[in-house]
Length: 259
Image (cartoon, rainbow, N blue to C red; front, top):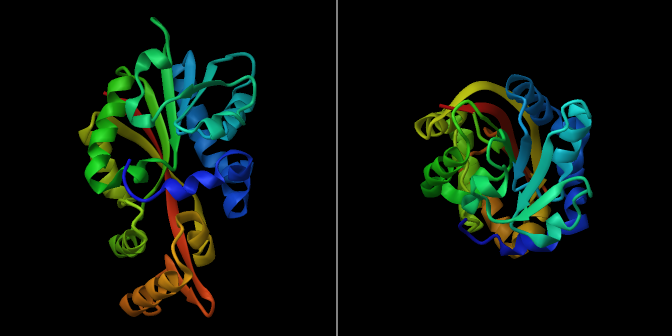
């Protein structure tokens, strides 16, 4: 991963489930992703469901509840932060490893089938790294197995450009594709997109960005003014306020099958 994201680590652990109004621990918000995973479970009946970058295991907990005991796949949460994994429920196995270094043997044994899911992680690898990480993920799954991911991406290239300009000015190293561009990258890596659905957008206030990325308040105000000059009154993604601004990050859930 790239960029200045070390400051985010102070949010890990119990705090993570409360940030951004509890977005990442809200069952209603997670429903599109969970529903897409359940659809892939019906198609493939996996032995293992692994959540890469799964944090505190919230998504896997919701999936486990919905799948029920009849199928009883093994649930594996993979994350690079021990502070996150330490808060996983006891029924979920944990693997401490960066997403880009995951190998199949860490998740599934010989003869076992695998389904992987990811939420809000791909943007950490930047524009240059997206294709490489997707190729690495494709190498983990076998033909016919599923990868279901929820990722920030935008239908409108101008809105994409606005969001990327903001994150570039905060020196995060993060980068957001368009919906069509992400589908092209997935399919180029050998992951055919069989379904796309929208998930709830994430509203972020400029004060939250100051806290998350350690940007000076004066600098964040300057960034807000720069963006307002660029997109005066025309952006849905960037909304200026008297005391700062709001940025709206759009999510799509994509069900992919390895070819």
